[in-house]
Length: 358
Image (cartoon, rainbow, N blue to C red; front, side):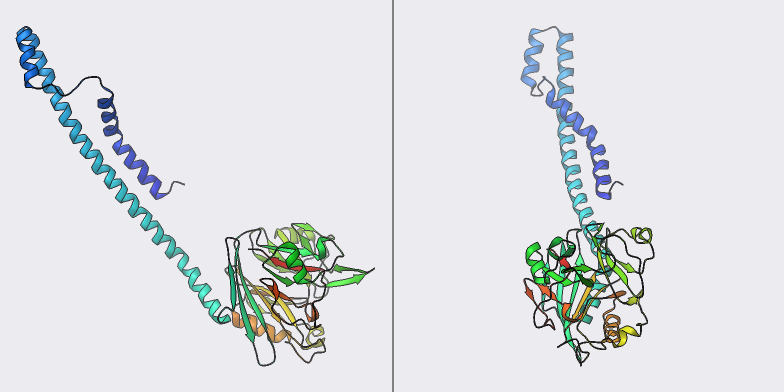
C-alpha cells in the first residue's frame, strides 16, 4: 500500500511535469532569445519589408517565450518550495502519529515496570532489552528479569555442552555461547553418567529427543516463531506443533494461565514447602518475566512457596507463569556473573539453560 508521503510526492511530480517539460524544451532549443531592437533594424535594412516583418514577429514571439520561461521558472521554484514544505509537514505528521500509536505500549510498560521497582541493571540493543530488579519479601529474596525480545536471535535454549545428555552450569553456558544472560531451564534425570532433560525439549525448532506427551503435572513451555511465550499440557506433537515453538523445556507445575492462578497440586505444596525457585512468565505485550528466588537449602526451611510465587506473578501483572527447575538449579547470570546465590553453595551442572543475547 502506498504511504501518504509517497502519494503526495507522486501528485506534486505530476503537477510539475508540464513545467519541467517546457523548461527542458527551451534549454534544448538552438535559438537564442537575445534578439534586440538593433538586430531588427539591421534585418529590416537588408531584407525586403515582408521578411523584415516576419523577423519582427519571430523576435516578438521569442521575447514572449523568454518571459514565459521566466514565469514558468518562478512557478516551478514555488512548487518546489511548496513540495519541500509539504513533505516536511507530512513527515512531522507521521512522526506524531507513530508516537501516538506507541503511547499505549509505553504507558503499559511503565506501569508493569513500576510494580517491579527500580532496575538495578539493564541491557538494551537491537535484539533485546533486559532489566534486572531485586526482589525482597518477608521470607525470601531474589531477582526478577524483565525481557523484551526484538529478534529471533535474542533468546535460545542450550543443551548442556550442546549435546543431549551433556551438563554444564548456567555461567559456563553463558560464557561458551557469548550470551549476556542465562537462566536455568527444565528438569532433568540422570542415567548412565549422563544428565538428560525430562519431557519435551525443543532446540532451534527441533525435538531434542522426540515428543513426550504431558503426564501428571508435566508441561512444556517455550518461545515460538512470533517471539511469544507458549506453554501448557500437550497430548500430541501435532497439538504442540500448531504453536510453532522454536525452543523450550519441561517441568512442573503450571502456576498461572490467562491471568488466573492455577491450583497447585498437593504433591508440590509440600515437597518441599519452601525452596529456591525459578519461574518464566509473560505479559500481555509479550515481554518475558523471569523470577529467580534464593534459599539457603532445599529442606523446606527457606525460599518461597509456589503460592507465594503466584502472589508475586499476580502483583507484577503477569499473564501466564510456569515453574522451572528450582532448588540448587536456580541460577541467574547477568553480564557475566551469577547474581543470585545458588543453594548448593556452588553452581549445579544442568541439562538445559535459557540464554539471552544482545
